[in-house]
Image 1 (spheres, rainbow, N blue to C red):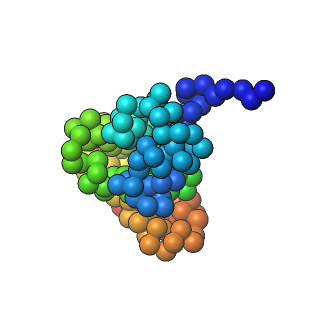
Image 2 (image 1 turned 60 degrees about the vertical axis):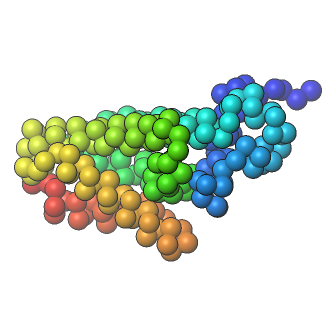
Image 3 (image 1 turned 45 degrees about the vertical axis):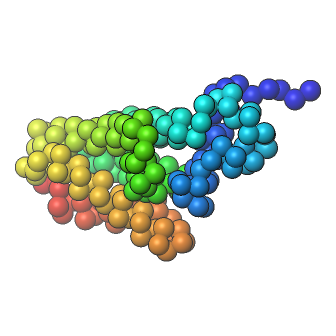
Length: 195
């Protein structure tokens, strides 16, 4: 007899399915029909977990927020600001390589237009992440490890390097290891951010 999956297990599957659809076709192509087809269930079965497509995307964005918070949590294990930022690069790139979706979600007008819950969920994920990085840079300034910079601008710059690296990776058909960019990025970050 086959064991029934818990709601959390099924929702995790939905997250990964949505990630696949976004990676292949973009966020606008996510639908309850496509998710159900890929899960091998009927479309009405999806409604046990989500009322509609918008609720499914809000769940996806909230789950994404949890994953970004996990990246920050892992980074907190670093002893210095440099170690923390390097851990963020490593963990963030691993997440991108696993899901292949972050840049497409962040720049998708499907999130910004229409349902305000989607925009709110993405805003909370991104601004919370930026706040965590800002705090790391602020702490680095206080410890004398980081040059005197506006911590929020430093966080924007740092996140920008992630976005630019990921875009380059995607434009090159993901043919190189994104996580292989960490040392190169750190070498340049050393020149710009650290004393």
